Length: 258
Image (cartoon, rainbow, N blue to C red; front, side, top):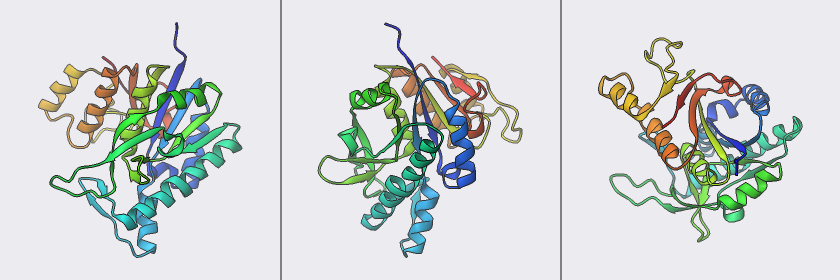
């Protein structure tokens, strides 16, 4: 049986934390045809609120160390302020959205990250996704809006990387839908030359990426992004697109396939 198309889009905090850029983004999001899921960040808002409350943020390799005080902050910001603002604005443009953390409907369970070189505190590594629940909602025309919070099924929420949530949701939903996973960031795609915003690499496969990494063309934070993308492809996601947030309703960007 032919699967219906589903687009899972991950958008960073930078876009969703400004009301103007959020409105522009959601207008583009609404133009995407077929079923869709939105996964959002919100780290800068969490840092700002933490500072107001006298709770300092500690980041290691771009990952937030989440103690009990910071867990309260990210729960307020991710599961509350940012998530519900997105849901309200989607309702205003005729999209029936439902904001969820991993604890809601037990859709995503994780375990607290074990302490190795760094103790990240209340940070979750995803262990289980209840894709049946999500697919039922999606089939009813609901657009899930997923906050970067999971739970351990023992009463605690856990701060979880939004890229990871998007990837894990896309992989789990691939058994029900023909899934395209889209990562939005500030460039038009993966670039051949970082200084030239128009040097977008249109297509990437594992062999091409390995070659570009060995030549230093692809480096830094883009490497884990691409590793996530290939993991998703291996798990049944049809394609992964890396593009700029204002281009999500177009075919522009870097497409990653088998």
